[in-house]
Length: 254
Image (cartoon, rainbow, N blue to C red; front, top):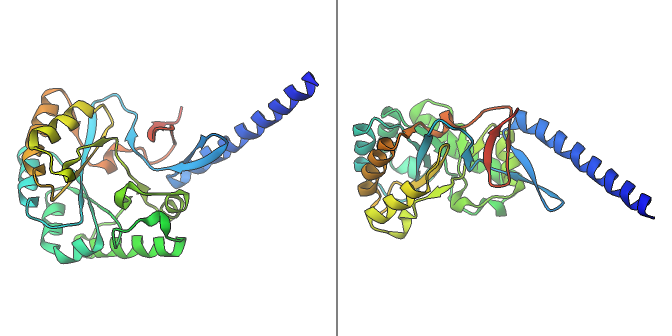
């Protein structure tokens, strides 16, 4: 009985290893990667990147208003930092001049969906419509292909990650949350970011947070003084030959 038990365990481990190998190989070509939670494989987006060069990305979700956007763009320009902005379609269409200003400032633009809904509740066709329509609205203004996608509310499931990947998008989350949408003070926002950042971090902020624009210069200056540099997310991530650990950290393949 002991030998039978050991044989069963060996077979189970062998099958699991084979499945991981297949999923890993698929990941290199699709931009999605599966990790195991218990015995269930789950697709993960990119939360951060494993790199040792103290390079990070700062990102802004654009869904409501523009009152503080000029100030954010000015802070980025003064610090010579390029960021990534994720835009909802209705925001893109309502504020095309801001889309142009963001793009012309050397910043990167990704889609944040069409309707800012919980996309884990949508089927594949609905997801495709959300991504295609929102990207088309951005591309119409900038003339540049959209490659990055951030799910509204950080809400996702396997269907969403898989569908986005099949359409050629890298799904991006974050590992440093400024909580600026809670209207924290500028100093509280800044300290949350500064204390949470590590090499390869993706910082989440919003273009219309009440005190976001005040916090951005503090964040940029402090992190630069600590030896960090900034690039758009599209320049931070690995595009192929990578894995993702169970924290969502993207790791280059050996």
